[in-house]
Amino acid sequence: MRDIKADKLYAAVKSIPKGKVSTYIEAARAAGIQSPRYAGTLLSRNPYIGKIPCHRIVRSDGRAGGYSGPAGQKGKIDILCSEGIEFEGDLIKNFNKKFVSLTKTL
Image (tube, rainbow, N blue to C red; front, top):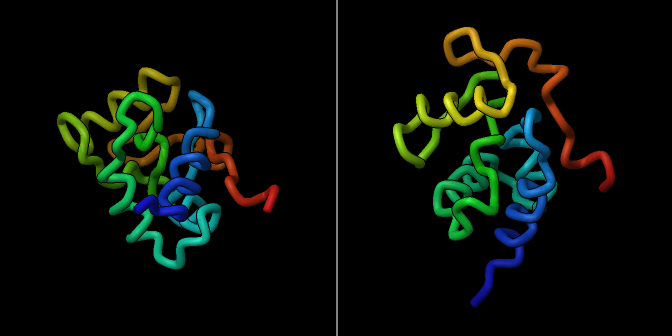
């Protein structure tokens, strides 16, 4: 059985362009999921590796957050850096300029 909310979540995350990020809270809201942690769990099980850029979902405080892909959080930061996101440690520089809302059109 398909999980409609997971499909909505993946569609929302897929809409984030390179060089931008959104948050677990935004992704959860866009998919009608009450818990950002549950959204994170669904993203960690992403069956569409390479098509759904889960690495572009970060914590609402501007930190990278977890990542179940290769090299964990460091791998996530490396991928985001290759897309033009700059960091100080695990904190995104100019987070507000890199943030994209997934719920503005709701």
